Image (cartoon, rainbow, N blue to C red; front, side):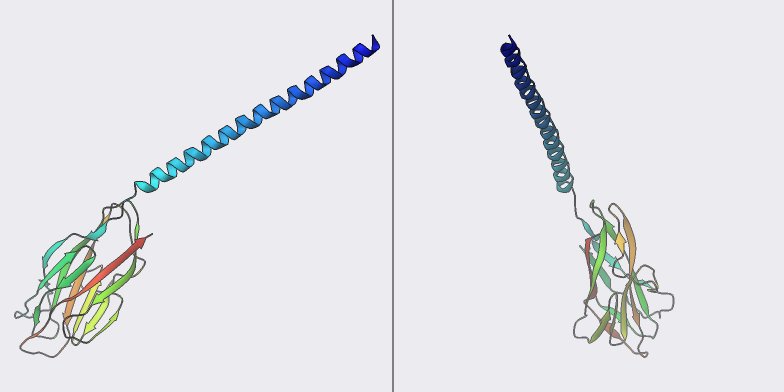
Length: 199
């Protein structure tokens, strides 16, 4: 009798240990399943979010006539600015008097879903001219080109300017003649290319 009781206790103890091990194994499998589901969902959401992003920043394309600044002479002839993607160039303008100037009002737009930061302002020198450039300011002989946030070219567009997604901003290309009075001074092909990166 004593022996059978002892065997019964040992068997019950083994069954209890086995039962506890099985319960722990089931809990572990359940926890691992939940963790796997969470990781899978986060990966799917992250992938879905990144695949729906759109990069689209550019000037509103077109040809823009120059507007004479108030200090300009009657003989000034402003050329046409052509905007395309992130590039703007100016056709031939004819200057005769110190202080002659033209301004071109452009719209820069970010129709994408990613905020953009201006990384590089690359100047395009006009045909057959010697120029010095510094960011959004370019001086070619006696003509100064600026790309700015205001019509007079006082608030220059600078690196790290942010254009949030879905927004647009006015920018102005100003061209000023600082040379001596003359019959005609002209240049063509000058402009700027704006290179944006993700903010």
